[in-house]
Length: 228
Length: 99
Image 1 (tube, chains in turn cyan, purple):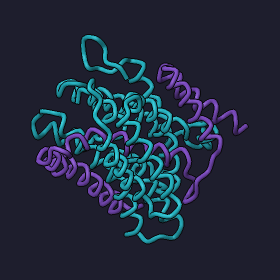
Image 2: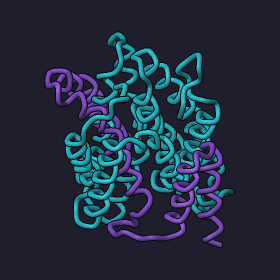
Image 3: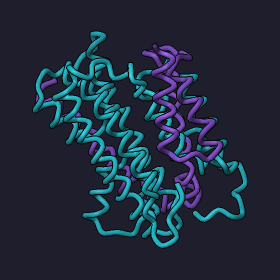
């Protein structure tokens, strides 16, 4: 996740990795969405305007087990509320106009905020954010079209191990945060709490409650070398 | 999933993102403690997403081929392997264990 010496652009290997991961997500998610929706146009439109694979999957999951439309919508929204938290976090670190700020908000996802927040200057944060956003959009759209139009040929994408790719990428992205004690505590408490609550809490809420990890980590002294 | 549902889902998700960017950011800037909290949120929230993607199977927790793939990825990340190697190894491990 390191910067190059001359710019805040993430290394090409990082961008390619993010693009490949979002290609894999685009394929796996949109094969499922297409099966549920039954329309290529709707599947592609949803991929573009919702821009949250987990929200789409949460909606479908609730409907598939007989849940109401309202319950499914709420599940989709709750799952996406983490993007609001990430947007709030990103918003404190950028100095841009309202148009770019709004565009950034609408594109907030886990990897681009995760990479951007590790930069040391406001310009570096927004530069890294847009580079990663570009890479993930390229992968996501290629994956979406592949999933919709070639899904029958690919078959079960999880057979290829693609469901392990996204968590692996996210882990790589936050690795630098985990090498400092406050970040490690936030991650362990947040991740552990989420895992503990998954079997008992409504869809999406364990991720929101993972915020507790950040609150607990506030009690850990900030490292002297911290730049944020 | 009708057009109405797609639009409702999209409007809700977009609203949450904008609310976070404007409302959340304003709150963080007003209360100094929240500024540090804001820098810790990505670690907590992204870790929760990782936990869910690695261990959730519906409403239950499971350790399976996918978890093994992510474990291999974790070791490679610890060894500072390039990100492409990490994600390819995760996918390959998971796929091989499912053969």
